[in-house]
Length: 154
Image (cartoon, rainbow, N blue to C red; front, top):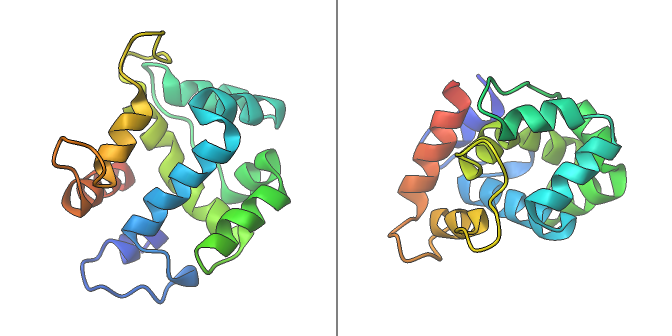
């Protein structure tokens, strides 16, 4: 069973891998995007870290290329991963492992036309806010769990 499968099992058990639960995973992603300068900044960091081809596949219309936690941690750097892991009671390796499982599908969902949104288009981070319960679309843990569960089954 994967880390996110355990976290989303509905039992409320958060004892696995530092105790990240579904809300913490989305908060982890939100922190990563904020600290990276949004999706564009994150993609630039991944490009500079040698994961540009994989990251572009997440935005594009084709299949999403997987990355490992080690690859993602290496591309984003141990300082950022350590900070993100520490914010949620874990460590950098746990954060990079979780993000490696979630980011390909999440970036794909936030760029549904196979490209970054142009000026004036809806901000994909608003969709993330809605999933966290901050939007007007009625998002929340149910939507969040459904999205994460769907991402993990791909």
